[in-house]
Length: 364
Image (cartoon, rainbow, N blue to C red; front, top):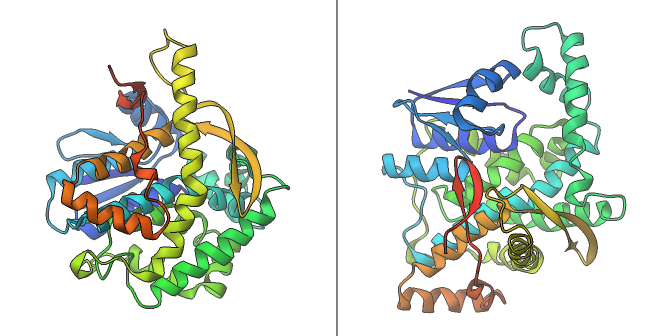
């Protein structure tokens, strides 16, 4: 029996909960209350992030990508990793996009739309799970204020909000809705790593919160149906599409991923190298190392540089580098078709790794 420490309101908890259900791994879920943070999460992981998965052997796993890596290695049945190279890469691209870029609309639609008092009650459960509703709302409002403070840090401002909404509704939801009209998941009738990457923001914030949930069901019902399908236990295994096929319905989104997200990832890599040079005696890398610009729908704004995004980027680059010469040739032809053939040639000079659930630079 595994134990999942998390919360329904938590973005990344939704990702791992859906994964555990699909893998048909027995687990119990425990709400990550203040007491659980103090008594379990902080002592066992040394960081204050959820979700955390406790294995039957008593190991505590943190970070959704590494949790999935660990569990895939332990449970090869019902694998969510495509073996065909182009599908494998596309799966990782969507996982990175969900974990990083879709956090922008997820945070905007949660904190800048009318999701209250629902959100106050949800956050109040973390502080006082057994208290009456008015007490939960009191504590939830205080805790919610802390999390809503991250909105401008992500570059979500009055200047950028119109472009964020237009991009999310007319690009993200539109193309996903078209895709899920004919495909159960991203790459066929079996979910891949990329599906679970999308599940985080699309479930907890954009489906479950009242205002964006209503919006999704109205303008993208196929996306809402996909979220519900991803949430079910005992899902049929299904198959990835044959012949390493990538559905044409995904091509506009893949091109958009490279156009908008990848310049920011390149900037992040440069910023971390500069930070390392300026801080040669620091061992652990802070979660944020300054600010840089980003653009959505040709509207630019500044945001915090997240060092953790380089760690996730390295996963995609490593996936590509591990392909054989013939596999790279086929994958490169696909990348050229979405005007992205140069992006996977990126060199990361100062690579990062995880040490005690914190980022450090890899030894040269």
